[in-house]
Image 1 (cartoon, rainbow, N blue to C red):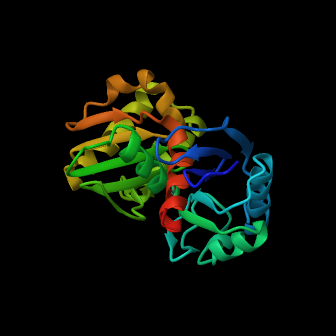
Image 2: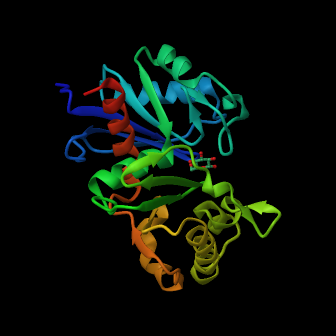
Length: 252
Ligand code: BGC
């Protein structure tokens, strides 16, 4: 049975997609998490089909919240760094909703993760500027000022050593692709965090994404002078935040 506390949250990543039904008032999953690989090509048709498969898995009939790895402006996807370029300036909410037969509410994936961490995780009750960074296929960012989201910040795209973008060097995928040991990667991550710390003077930086599970392996290289935390919801935050976003859009 579906209650208005319960929403299906879907996290579309550059590599994998995952979903669960979430109690949006407690942040608890009311089902097991279900995962699948992001289909190739990662175009609107294939991703919408995969979203429908996730909905069918949960026999979900109702609106859905969906975290997406792109800038989301007025229901359109306005960037396409780690997905197919067909998403550039594409009316994604309308398209997906039509394909899956339910209203789909999109939110940037890192904003979604931040929404959940601020409500139920490390950011709870923290005033001032809190920055959540997700280290995955790319680097996503969610910035909160006194608990309020500044949406669609793209700090993975900060310039890195003047010629490249940071996510090509500091994301978890960059670590894997360049076969970096934890010390080399951790030191680069620290340099990146120091730059962000200099730009924003945040009260706290929270590190999320799948690699937050291995925090112990690189924590010693992170000497940046701010309060640095591992996301307590780890990489479930994106699902929870997507579900919370749907609730907010529905006005519940
Ligand atoms: C995208 C962001 C996204 C991040 C994490 C970046 O490449 O530009 O919108 O939040 O990856 O998925």
